[in-house]
Amino acid sequence: MPYNFSAPYNTSPPIRIIHRGKTREEYEQERLVQPGVAFPSASEQEHLLIIRLDITGDLFKNDFNEAKRRVKEGLKRLCTLFDNIYEGKKRIDELSTTNKNSAPDDEARLKSQDLRKAFKFSSTIGFGYGFFEKLGIPEYRRPKKLREMPDHEQLGDVTPYSLAQTDLIIQLCSTKDFVNRWVLENTLQPDEDEVIEKLLKKQKERRLNNETERRILKKLLEDTTPKGLTPPLKEGQRVCIDGQVLSSGEEECIPDIVSAIDGWATITDIHAGFQRIDGRNLMGFNDGISNPRPGKDDKGKLFDEKVFTTRDDENNKDLEYGTYMVFQKIQHDLDQWRELSVDEQQEWVGRSKGTGLLLGTLSEDDDASLARDLRSNNEKVRKDAAIDIEKLLAIQTDPTKRFYDERGSIIDVRGRRRTYKINPAEIRKRVQAWSHVRKANPRREDGEPEIVIFRRGYPFVETGLNNKILSGLLFVCFQKDIQNGFEFIKRNWLNNKNFPVPQKRGFTDDEKRQRHKVGRLSADELLDLLPQQRKDYGLDNPEDFTQALYDAGIVDPAINNRFNSRDIDKNDFSLVPDTQNTGREGLAGPSEHGTVPTGEFLAIVPIGGGYYFVPPIPKRRISDIGQQFF
Image (tube, rainbow, N blue to C red; front, side, top):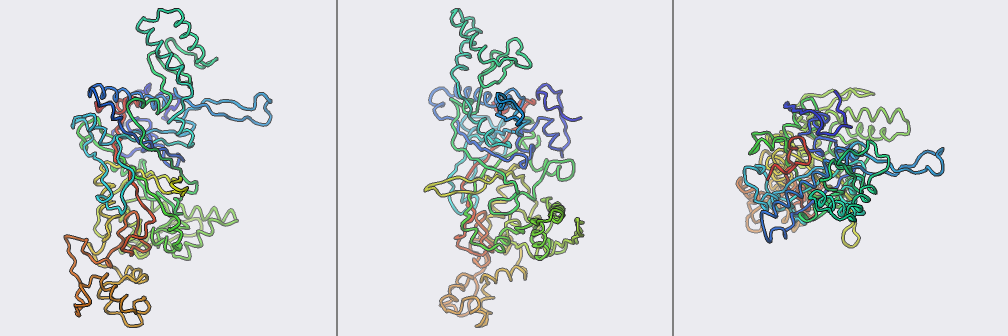
């Protein structure tokens, strides 16, 4: 039975669907997990606002228990705001223009909108390690696997981070950037609500004896109540200045996040992201093609198993269906990126820039032809090409499917115009070991384990110092275990300069040919070069050749006439000769072909972020999120 979105969540009968592998609608109906993870999808929410906060340090100068109480109550106010939005009690006025036949006095109207329905709005709150430490939360109430994000050296990134871990994070997503910012701060006249709340408190305590105060309270309540309110207010209800209907006179008017955190938390930084309508990132490539997704099929089960915690994963049952969130801001140097040719960019990423397909899915000619047809002036040609690309991409959406398998079976994909035969061996040949897609998810090739995370990335563009345009990616991911998810991928794959060789195997002939294009040769290969070949590689100068021998691991060509190669220390891969590197810049690489060892090609630079636990919704009440920790 379809869910009635017009009904408040907490009026629904209790539901607990215990099977795993759910649709987005089931997740939303159950109200077990916070919005902004499984639902709505990022493709439905074009705008992201990340707000990071710390608990205000001055709270702890005097009474610790009082400070803890204020944080608990403040957190309740904040999550009540999110609850009111989801129940449609907190709405936004949208100025809409009527059609041309309207009367002159009726050209513009304010329309009260439900944020969740009209703008696909979601709010997600996560808790950092510092939140639990500062408040002295006992271990049995804490998420079991939460800790602070390590520094750049521990994660293997090249440059120091400028964004540090915070105590809290709020993720706001919607179809309109203004909606996210309005939820952050929209208070225009806070004084009247404050006066009303003070007078109501006195009234409740039977201290409202002054006739003047009674008249003021009556007048203020009348002024803030819209005429013709439908349905009319019930006894004890009142309306805030912003139009929010409160069910009792004891409730506070909580207009926005800034008001809700006043006195107990401080905003440290805010980051705004967006989705491009063409589905590409700022580097021009389709993003998020291979990502687990909710659903009733095996992919849906994978999503549930990889993203949400179970009772066995955590210290207590109250944290089941929580998830661990990673936020990392990554800058792109697009000027440097654009200096690479399209072919170099494609080899760097491992995908076709024109179609988004893994290299080797189609021949170069077929891929280029399909990409051109997608931009054809002929509508039928364009539509047929779009259908073919979607069907070809569909087989690559499963993040666990092996594609870099030289013994894999041919896959037939029936398109609108013809049947395409996909050869995994050709994909392995074209998608080099040091390409981004293989380092981010090798799909169990070369003996690597299956590690899958759920990503919700949003590009950003902003200005920095000296009016320099800064752009990049607000990287957000969710998993049930950060150490065996995001961290494993960063340390063992993306930031491992020797991935996956020479740790696992030698280079294939195809990989050798790619490396030789840019002069990357092993010591033995250098020594076997004929004079003309040295010249072809720009190594005919004795000094250049000597330097190449040093780089290849020769101990000391000047005194060692036998040119013995340095042994590879299997316990310390920092001793592996740089010519064996498959890219050591991690997310800042791999270099053009995973081959520049000095790290000068930094097209992508992570600048920090944090780790957070996103708890489940206690007893189906968003207003109680976080209260389970106290």
